[in-house]
Amino acid sequence: MSAAVQPLRTPTRFTTAAVTNFYYSFVFLPRDQRRAIESVYAFARRGDDLVDGELPASEASAEISRLRELLDECYADGQPSRRLAPPAAQALAETVRSYPIPRRLFDDLILGLRMDLDGARYRTFEDLGVYCYRVAGTIGLMSIEIFGYRNPQTREYALHLGTALQLVNILRDVASDARRGRVYLPDEDLNRFGVTRDHLLGSRPSKEFVDLLRFECGRARHCFDLARQSLVREDRRSMIAAEIMAAIYWRLLEEIEHRDYNVFGPRIALPRALKLWTALSVYFGRDWRRSRQ
Image: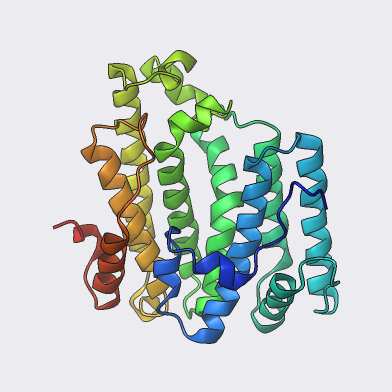
């Protein structure tokens, strides 16, 4: 690997960084499930680091191909080569050996990473939906195989929630992404509200920008609603980690709205104490849609 590229993080290093929103979801899981989900998120985080880093696209693409090699080894015999960061690779191998995670989900995730390398522009919301599935829906589907579920409808929950979380990420980072040449919001929406590249690169929200983000926040709320409607009673307790994640991202969405859609300053984030309180509230049965009250 290039000296400029960090190796695939071990699960421990990935999740003990309390700056991540996912830590507060995983902390309540049994040890085996926690180790498994950490290995999946470490893999995904590694891909994010590659496409968001400073490497030229050709080098980042080569490193992503190495991630596919890692998957080949994990799914072939569960004994990945020591040259591929042993602790994290071994953890991922254990995960795919212990849980019924289809290989195609990882392959679809890699396709999503390559979409970022090819440049983020989407003509319609349906086009953006393909990206959201690949980089977030796949993670949701992997996660529920680890959490355990009984009703097939829970797969719809995972897909809707993945889209909701990814939309919140896109809305929170729309200005910083634009400065890096990436525009995830669909062209049809930009045109509808008269938002130009200059609006996205500005230092404060214009009226057009506010109208656009209000519309997109409504879409994210709708995806959260679809997720909640898809979660059947028999699987609610096993999805507690996913519900904690939903609650934290719901609060992030509320914060975007509370700031009148001004995402041009410091990156919107929740205090650690608030994330912990949110996680505890959901764990003890509180409806995350009322978590701000």
